[in-house]
Length: 127
Image 1: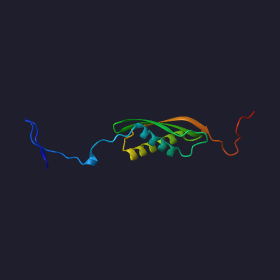
Image 2: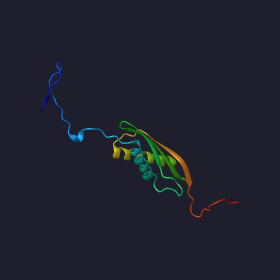
Image 3: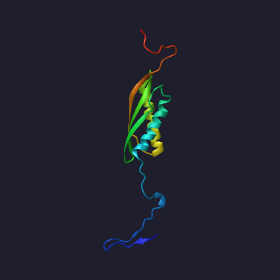
Image 4: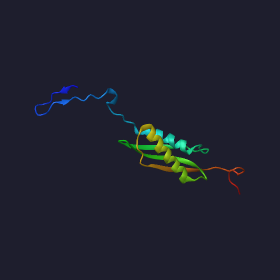
């Protein structure tokens, strides 16, 4: 162990050597976390209805905490609440697993519902 001679009023103290692999810092950009959250939402939504846009996300990272807002379009009719819970769970799990951040809440904003015509349904207007 190496000691470092300090100034006049300080005691001798051991020099702490930090291995190269443990020095520095890692910063993950908000847009990277947003990409992961968007993909997680896509996995949770499943097959998109015809004409629906892909889920998107906006994220604000503060230290090791990600605040997430996800925008989705769903088919109709469906259990909207259950689908939103599914999206929240998947986003929290994937962001936590892939970047090690806490996600205290995920705001799921349903932008649009797409009517899914059942078998034998007539498309278009009727008089």
